[in-house]
View 1 (spheres, rainbow, N blue to C red):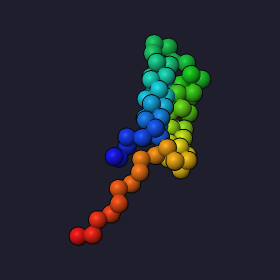
View 2 (view 1 turned 120 degrees about the vertical axis):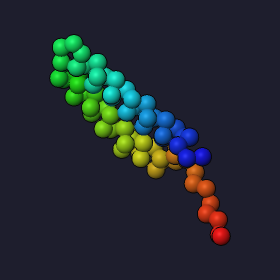
View 3 (view 1 turned 30 degrees about the vertical axis):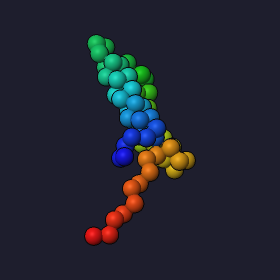
View 4 (view 1 turned 60 degrees about the horizontal axis):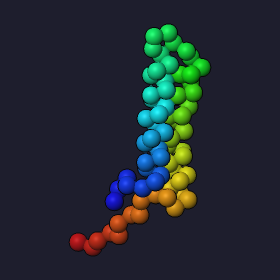
Length: 67
């Protein structure tokens, strides 16, 4: 099933964590270093998900059917 894999879950959790850290860093007084850490975590979610998928932790693709 599409997206139901450890690679997808890891990428989504990393992205959400990055957005959460970045958002908290901006309230009430911006702490730019913490914000940049949050942005870096969110940006690393894609490559980490792709690497995990390539390592075999991604969802298996359904075989194509002939119509």
